[in-house]
Amino acid sequence: MRDTWVEVDLDAVAANVARLREWAGSELMAVVKADAYGHGAVPVARTALEAGAGWLGVATAAEALSLRAAGIGAPILVLGLVPDGELADLRAAAVAVTAAGVRSLGPKSPGPPLKVHVKVDTGMGRIGVLPERAAALVEAVAGRADLSWEGIFTHFAAADTDPEFTALQTHRFEAVVADLRARGLSCPWVHARNSAAILSGQGTGNLARAGIALYGLDPGGAPGRAQKLRPALAWKCRVAQARWVPAGTSVSYGRTFVADRPVRLLTLPVGYADGYRREWGGRAHVLVRGRRVPVVGRVTMDQTMAAAPAGFEVEAGEEVVLLGRQGDQTVDARELAALSGTIHYEIVTGIRHRVERVYRS
Ligand SMILES: *Cc1c(COP(=O)(O)O)cnc(C)c1O
Image (tube, rainbow, N blue to C red):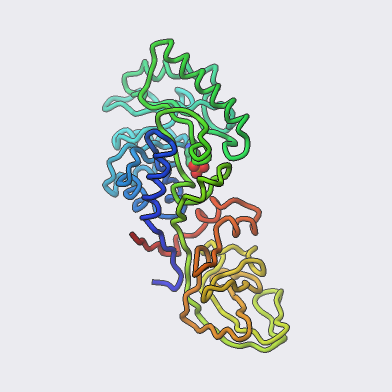
């Protein structure tokens, strides 16, 4: 194995599932798209199902089919729209798809019906049918023998920051569901809540879709509950080379860092091709021997340098935490995200497959 790896604590995932089910007070869908936000879709999916999640959510047909190929038989919903050419495989694998219109469901076909969840766009402005057209779409789906209507859902745009708008989206969605019931159309699954809505007690339905909180990361909007989540991922490496360099030594491309005194230069075997982002050069910290040590000079494709202070004889082979906890120090995904002007979702999903995932439980 390379000297950089990601450790995923599956017990933390299981504990988060239990919390989320309790807070949601409903069935839970574990959202494992994008390789479970970088944590590894198959081990996370298995753990979440064992811990009580009833559903899995993914973004693409390929993600759904790879879960099936791993022997996972639980209900799966593809949350994105899939091209016509991928529907036959999903139908055969009993994977549910999202519909935003009848045209997105392909031509009529024989065989077992394709499971469909109708997506209503109540304010996300991404995919879905507008509320006033939802009933017509549901009637079209429910009226086709080759389709099986099993759910209706919506997605919140700002459950972490805007309770008023979330209440408006909830109201629009509930009105659609009530209208369907009045027309004699009721379906098993009604879902709206993402992680932020689950933690803050917003939204409605008998199923809730948790992504970021499943991994123990704070979705925002409910700090008290977020503190009870357990982060599942740590990214580590071993020092590849450690040596004293004299004052005046410049480090890495562009010579952006010049030592103003002797420093213990640590070369780490990780770079931007692993997802350790270039803009963290000169800004991020790593943890060594329980202390925060600055990253110096530019991050390169495969290697990054850090400078330990005098009196701190770190040796090659010592363990370094790039993201996670060591002793009483933490570098969390939010801290790194802030350095990049982005969100922690992008940091964990951005750790490349070149970095092996190892699992603890
Ligand atoms: C990604 C996604 C989720 C999960 O969102 P989190 O904020 O990570 O909980 C839920 N629903 C849909 C439709 C999504 O695309």
